[in-house]
Length: 223
Image (tube, rainbow, N blue to C red; front, side, top):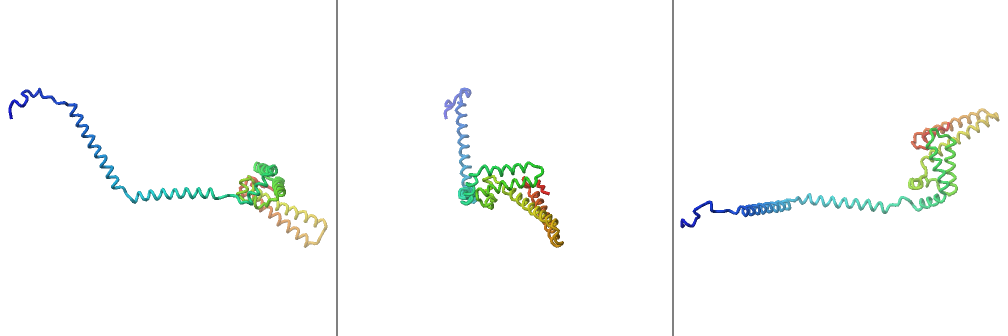
């Protein structure tokens, strides 16, 4: 080598630092890109096929459940043809039906519910049934009573109370009649027994109504 092929003065050698920095950054970016691609490839290769299958199975099961619920909602009809016919009849007698609802509301607001209240309530319901010729059993069904806002449960207890009260009053009237006519002792004994039994039945009906929790009968006080 010739001695004069190198610069005599090292200070005269210049290095383009900006170019070096750009090349260094490009190399680093390339390295990071290669590492990211390698990690993605590794994740794809190491994916658990069993876990993936479970995820798909759960998704399909959830879809089947949703379809099943939808099918039941669409296909199930809460009312039969007979019940629809009853509702149509009763809606044509809305004024009478509203009287039953009003009687139930009045009973619910009272701290003490008397025999007179229960008679008024049951008589209003009886008027509806007589006018529409509807079977009372159908009105007791939840599907019908909920649609109509018919106080079926409360009316059931009220009727038991009124029937027990009627039986007791009938036995009382018969006993008084026999005492006035001065019949034989055996007949008087039978009348007293009937009177006591009817009174006990009335008390049982009252306790059951009170224990039912139904607002229109839970404060029953018929004697």
